[in-house]
Length: 266
Image 1 (spheres, rainbow, N blue to C red):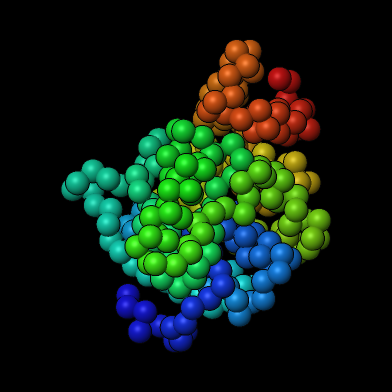
Image 2 (cartoon, rainbow, N blue to C red):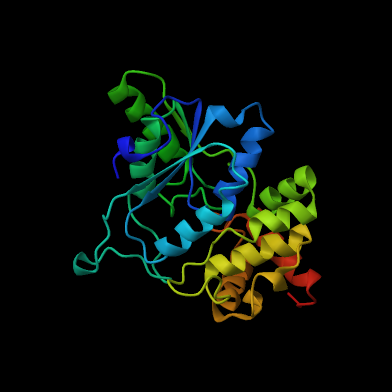
């Protein structure tokens, strides 16, 4: 969709938040509001590239729009195609270069671009979420646009549990649950929250640690999924070897904390 087809006037903003309709990038808007930005300073940008869960993301954005008091821009770029084998699946979720593409789009509207990335994700196995990516992307966009462009994540030192706890502390549990219930995390193309994939399990951990009622969001307990059990085994092995190159110490400990709160022996 052309920018000229939007009712929002084309202008330059102080901050572009690249918005998936998920929990982290939604909370990023509230985080910006508490850190010196005004609604008119910020634009929320969603780019559809053909992911199988795109319809869910757009539904989430529609439900969340009344809470987000900034301009919203939505673009469609059907990059992913089954015939060329680049459509993500629950088992293979990474879309190479996705964050580079959306950072480039964000730089057309603001000199500062926020992407969603958390502590525990910013390692070498996630090449478009780590600090090397943010530094290189900021550099190349600054070079080609001949101005200082900063591409970053506001949550580089925060886990998903810490981000959700921050929202609860700032806005209260009731309002947080109201807003966050409308966000979507699950990679299942059909179910809103399958409770069986790794993203559901990671979100569940944040819910438990932030004191939110997870049963309002999932029909089944994500901690009982085979994916969750597999991750716990990998986390235990990482702790045994004291190897936190892939799974961070914070992520592991917060996972075990949530499980223990729910009475699961580790």
